[in-house]
Image 1: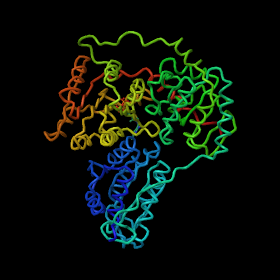
Image 2: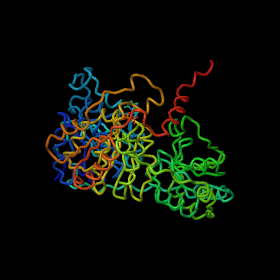
Image 3: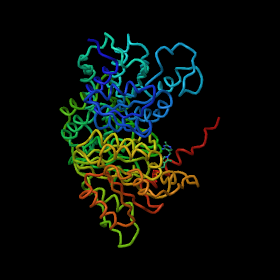
Image 4: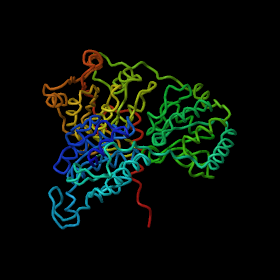
Length: 565
Ligand code: TPP
C-alpha cells in the first residue's frame, strides 16, 4: 500500500534523529501536524510563538545534531525567519517546515489570508532564500518525495537550515512514490583529496616543527566539521598550549592539561592572550574573525605565523592553501607528524598567577555579579550545560571553567537577544541527561519570555538565572543613551503567573550572596525536578571588566569616520 507525504516526512525526521518538533499550528499546517502526531516516535512541542519555536529547533540541533520546527504560511514563516537566520550563522541543520497554500492556488492570482494582500505566492520563499541553503516548495505529490529528501540531505550535508513548504491539501493523500516504510536514510561520507591532504600535512608539519612556542586555538567551525575528537588528538600529540576562541567555547575540552583559556585579544582570560599573541606559530582551527571576536579588529595576530584550518581548506601562513582537505582528516594526520613541544604551556605555567582574593560579599551587601558567577561555577559538572545569552552574560559565562562533558552554547555570530529562552527550551528537550543552566539578561528575557510556559509544560528542570541589572548593559558600554534603560518587571511574579499552578516551577528573587546561595541550594535539592527561576537583582553598573574593555574597542570600530572620497 502506498504511504502518504505526511507519514514520509514524519519518518524521515525520526530517521535523522529528530524526536521533538517545535511548532505553532495554523490552518495551513494542521493536516501535516496530524501526521506528525501520528508518528509514535515524534513528540510535537507547541510553542507560544514561531520565533521561539525556531530558537528551540536551534537549541535542539546543538544538542542532537539536527532540529525541526513547523509553522504556518507567511505569518508564521516570517516570524520564524530571524531564528532561522541565526541557525544559518551557527551552521545548524534546522529543518524549517511551513504549511503552505492549497496546491490548486499556485499559478492563480488569488489573494490568500495570512499574506500581505497581494496575489504573490513567493514572498515567504524569497525571504527564506537568503537564510537557508535549500528551499523546497512541495505543491504536487509527484516530486514531493524527491524534494523532501533533497532538502533534508542538503541540510545535513551543509549543516545549514533548509525551508520546506508543504501545500496544506497534500499530507494525507496516499501516493505511490511513498512506500509505507521508507528506505532508511543514509548519506555517504565525503573524503578528502588524498594528495592535497598529504601535501597540506607535510607543509604544516614543516612549518610547526621549526616553531619555538607554537599554540593551537579552537574556533566555532569545529562544530560543523565534527572535529572535536580530532582536535583533542592534535592537542594531546603536540603538547602545544591549547586555547579557544570565545565563539568556540564548549567545543574544546577545558580539562586538558595544556588548556590555557579563552583567546579573545585584549579580553582573553588571564595570561592566555599574552601566550597566544607572543607565539611564533599558531594553528587556528575553524575560526571566524568578526568585529566582535576580534575586539573591534584589535587582535595581534599575524597571518604569516598562522595555519588556518577551515572545514574544507587549510592555509599555511601567507600561502600555500590546500582545498578539499577536511578538518578531521587534516588534524588526525597532522597529529602523527608533529614533534612534541610544550614550550608555550610551560611559559604559561611560569607566568600564571591564580585568581587572587577569595570573592565574598559582606552580609547585607548587594549581590555582585562576580560573586554570582563564582557560585554558578561551583554548580557545573559533566551533567550540566550552560546557555549564555547575548549581553554581559557572554563575558561572565566565558570565564566559567567547564568540567569534562559540560555543555556550553551561545549565539555569538548572530547575537540576537531573546535567543536563549527558545534555545534553552530546545536544548533541554534534546539533552535530557543534562541540567541546563541558562544565564539571561533582563533585556533579552523581555523579548521571548513567554516560552517559559513551554518549558514547564515539557516538565523541564532547567535553572534560569535572570540577571536583573535594569538595562541593556552591553549597549551601555558601547554607547549609552536613555534607550538603554528598560522597564523593570517583577520577573518572579511574571514566571509565577505563567506557572499558574500547573506543572513544576519554583522561583526566587535574590539580592544578596546569602540569598543566592540559599536559592541555589534549594534549586539543586528539594526543587531539583522543577524548572527553577532565580532572579538576581544587581547594580546597573556591575559588569564584567571584559565588557568595559571590549565595549570601548567595539565603539571605536563602530564609529570609524567615513573614508575621504
Ligand atoms: N535586537 C536584537 C534582536 N538583538 C540584539 N542583539 C539587539 C537588538 C541589540 N542588543 C544587543 S545586546 C542588547 C541589545 C538590545 C541588550 C541586552 O541586554 P540584557 O539582556 O539585559 O543583557 P545585559 O547587557 O544587561 O547583560
